[in-house]
Image 1 (cartoon, rainbow, N blue to C red):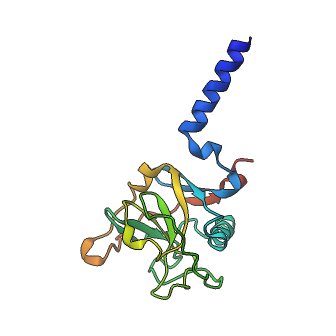
Image 2: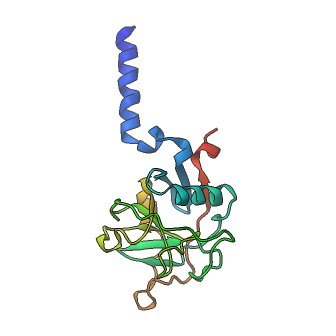
Length: 183
């Protein structure tokens, strides 16, 4: 009997290690449902507490549901979070103060989009498709994809001659805090 319990414990540990989203704190995990599958994003409340709070607040309100990826540059990033789909919109919440941190912009990192003014982040964000060190310390990193990056790479890309603007863009199907889904 002890051998069976040990084997089951070992198997459970292996599954948790292979699927980090399963092991993470569900209150600090976002499920981003795309047309091709679910993406799990681990939130970084220790690095960007106010940005994480905003993302969770908007996700819980259903703000991101149906919002398009209006700017997607192949090999760089996929941007969303503007309900107008133009890249100029945001939520009705006040803009956030920057929380630049030491997290590098590597594949899967989620960062807030903003204007040239550092304290203008609101609801728009981008997911990095490939390492982009020139963004480090310039944009607030609030999380990272820990599962489903293959679905992020399938988001329809924009045109190079249009700075990544996407014709008939893909949308966020649904975006929720994992704790609210996995009850």
